Length: 75
Image (cartoon, rainbow, N blue to C red):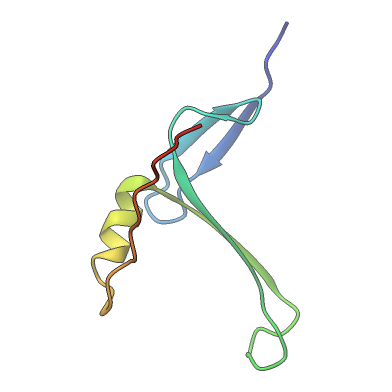
């Protein structure tokens, strides 16, 4: 049985993040934003992917830290 390979690239560093049949070999952040009436991007849909390294670099620049909660039950 052949597995379909999906290629995802980090928008920040360009690194290839390979997944197979919806199974992540490496985790990443996916953001999809549908802009609305009160923005200059009304009607646009933006999608980005960030590898874990770029996510760490990005969030270190925040004035307020990211809220982190420990998950007690992992699936």
